[in-house]
Image (cartoon, rainbow, N blue to C red):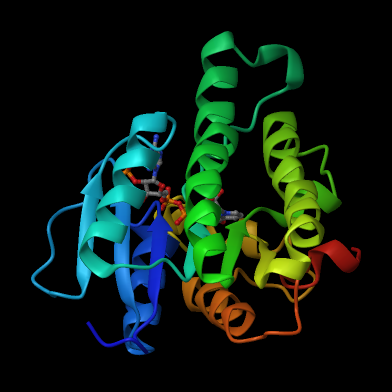
Length: 236
Ligand SMILES: NC(=O)c1ccc[n+]([C@@H]2O[C@H](COP(=O)([O-])OP(=O)(O)OC[C@H]3O[C@@H](n4cnc5c(N)ncnc54)[C@H](OP(=O)(O)O)[C@@H]3O)[C@@H](O)[C@H]2O)c1
């Protein structure tokens, strides 16, 4: 293994923004550990795939153990796996609560703990979490308390981690998207969703990838919640 070749772990990497993140980091010559429930093996020898449910702590354990066994180090973790369930508050079921907190929060917690423990050994590393701009501008047309509860928690945890690890060479940042053209949103919804942004259109998956890559190459930036949201968090 080349000592200079960095290693990134990306969750939710089977489709959408996560799959584009895999491409973006490979373009920068990172070795990639990609995980999701339905992730398939790759022909690229610099991509290791590990299938599993990120809400299960055993998935986090396997991903980090296999990453270290194969590539020897972890430089970056991108917490991208996430689900969005929009409902009036009193309509959420116990299953909705368990699903959304399981993937968005428990999924973040276990793999981030294990990844930072590896990063501490090298006194270097970066954790980036994908949250949502909706946290900063709740919309009565899109009631989604579970998104605010979980992704808002990730924004707060990002700042907390940034400060806790600031002296150890480990940075923590978040990218806070507006509504992005990913498989999450069928084509027929794009015009209406685009109109919800001051810039008048949805974002592209590459907008999020570029923001993550910027943060990963920005050694003086930590504790940042980078909004890539067509102006939504600034106002309407
Ligand atoms: N698209 C948007 O408009 C938007 C806006 C704001 C924030 N975001 C955030 O951006 C991130 C990526 O969203 P996306 O639009 O790319 O969504 P997506 O197309 O629905 O992809 C979600 C990814 O998460 C994985 N995933 C879901 N449940 C999982 C589980 N239990 N265990 C492991 N992996 C799981 C999926 O893989 P498997 O099904 O194979 O497990 C898939 O790879 C999410 O955190 C989302 O909240 C998206």
